[in-house]
Length: 337
Ligand code: PEP
Ligand code: MN
Image (cartoon, rainbow, N blue to C red; front, side, top):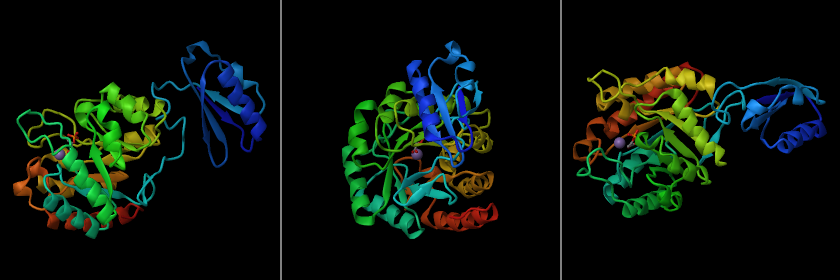
């Protein structure tokens, strides 16, 4: 249920409503808008009647939220959430591109990649230290040593870091280096991990499960948010369909659908979606045109030598060209990059 206060309702009326929500055993969620305050009621609202609040002073309207997600819903929080990381305003007007290799492989490799991201105006660098691999025999990342290299990138180049966290126990250690915690597609419904990142103070990028619906993605975001962490970035990274020419199918519809249902920033990952470096430019342009707030792009200084996801990693030249192309698309849809 959401309680919409009248335009300009005085603070004491707002406070009275909030107190009433708490007295009834529900958790109030306050969204102070520019014109009016919206108070969300969190809990099992089947035992709550609209009339409880309808008659209170300053209340304009009481609306039942039928969607199963609340904190993530735009009904609860009409204004876009903006998450600031290293000066990049994620979810705001500029499109934010995050680039870097799939995995951290060596000091030379990550520094070379990070210099290219920086030269292209990037403020956030990606790279996995802990890798969830389909085969246990594949390269599973450098672990702690990889995190240490990411920390060095951060201190010497001033780039913020996003890297994946795979288990609740790893959260404090990864959050010690990462500016954004990445929850991968395979862990979108790892509820213990969602609870743990929800208790962290770091923003979280939640990737859509490759077999998950948009509603399931939002319910996973709700797990993180209900633990107190409202800094969640959603990322569509391709879903499984019957199509086999691409690794996954990029669900471009997810952008307008998510922008309607939620206030959270929406990213696209054209690399995991296509599985082929040569399709990354086109899918990136489509994503920005559709209204994505940002992109997560895999770029490797020497894709043919990559220890993971080489086939989908763009070269530095293609990365640079893609950023230039995206600037023009962003401008065409009223944004910047
Ligand atoms: C990645 O970003 O390298 C990754 C493993 O992504 P996903 O979880 O989407 O497969
Ligand atoms: Mn990858």
